[in-house]
Image (cartoon, rainbow, N blue to C red; front, side, top):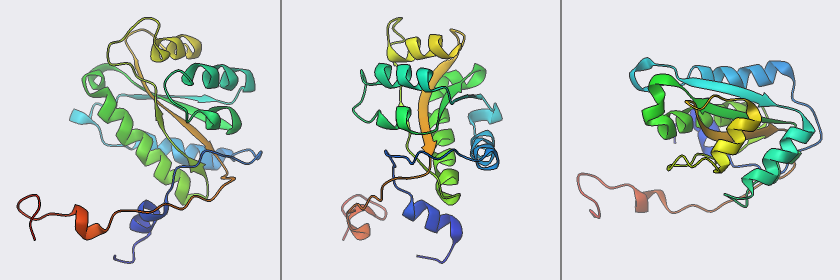
Length: 180
């Protein structure tokens, strides 16, 4: 692989679920938010909105709520910050993609700054009134026409994760799938 800071960040970033009890500096938080702000968007509509959740009671409520959709919720309550990533206006027809690009940019930026994160989806494709998305939107004050796509716990990592990957040559194909 080429020697490149961005490619190194992409290669080394891992999801972090455990965080130290250490606050995130405002400068680093703002850099992560800027990474989300500068994300690409369909038609350049820039549809994202962020709510930075620091209140321990609100994080606890979000933790309890998100247990309905995933087992990977601990970071919401033990990270110093959880960022709610919502999509508005012209982006709502592509809210999953818009939110994913934004969350991924923010997670990469976090890693490059020595922080850890992971993103978990809270959206409900059917937009049920009792869904995790709907309840989280009410808790965070989002209007009905906004889609709450992802939550991004953020803080200093308190774990080191190793993972194995498939061989690169086993996942890359040229011209047709399965070529030799």
